[in-house]
Length: 231
Image (cartoon, rainbow, N blue to C red; front, side):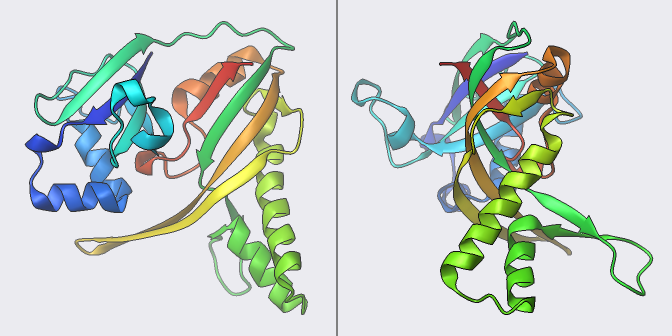
């Protein structure tokens, strides 16, 4: 696996592509990053979008543009005038009990079956908590916020064993956002929230699988890339 930091060289983008880039259009950004892997037929990568000003120091001349972290099964190839990348092999050595700092942008959802319907429907766990509060007559902003955060945290806790780790502390939550695009006859909707905190490795092989394959839904749209480092 390869972990890459990708910067955009805007001289190779037309105005429409630049507008989509600056608007945070995850679908368009996924298509843009695909150009790093010209020979692949299936999605060989996960990605996470940040902003240069938050990730680069002054010596690297940060701009008001997105920057991408990309995890891929093969080394990406820069696209002259469009995408620049710095890559390194990614093969973490993990042992039970290792403590790691983590970041995760995820699309936390739950499935619920409604009476009279044959199939379950997926719901954003934060919006579901907000709806439950309204049903119970709890409308105070602090109550709704606490319920939404509790649901988001529980979503991660419930999956941590399958992903090979335990949470050491309550994760910090930020950046909740709802995304929506129209692509031809298809409407794309999903939500994302950022998690950050400390985990302990419980099952190294499960955690490696989670790192390499991503976790949760909407991985093609910038979610699911679990980033870890030693403190």
